[in-house]
Amino acid sequence: MTDETKPPTGLSAPMRAWWSTVADDYDLQAHHLHLLGLACRAWDRADEARKILNAEGIVTHNRYGSAVAHPAVAIERDARLAFARLVRELQLDDGVMPEVRVPRRGGRR
Image 1 (cartoon, rainbow, N blue to C red):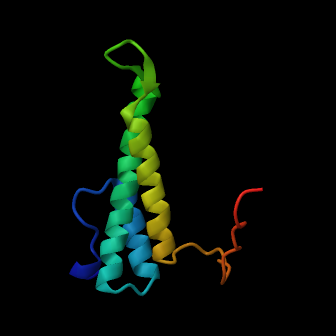
Image 2: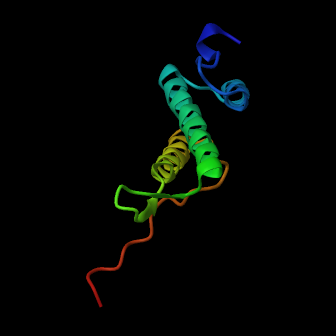
């Protein structure tokens, strides 16, 4: 493993291991390694938010006493979406993506 393919600092142990596996299995250029680092951080952020939600619940109360979604719900959602998009951008998913997207329906019916 070269200095270029060492996992960035601050990643969790599972993400350091995943980083190493991906860096070893794929021929990644420098910009890909940056995207891989962002994907690892996104996963760690989602995991951190999930731990908070497990401890505190998905609902909290605002200053008026109304039940509202815990802020970590949005953090987890956004981090998971970022991870999925980065994995797709790096083409790490083994699924075959269609060449063309299905067209949307035009207008309202």
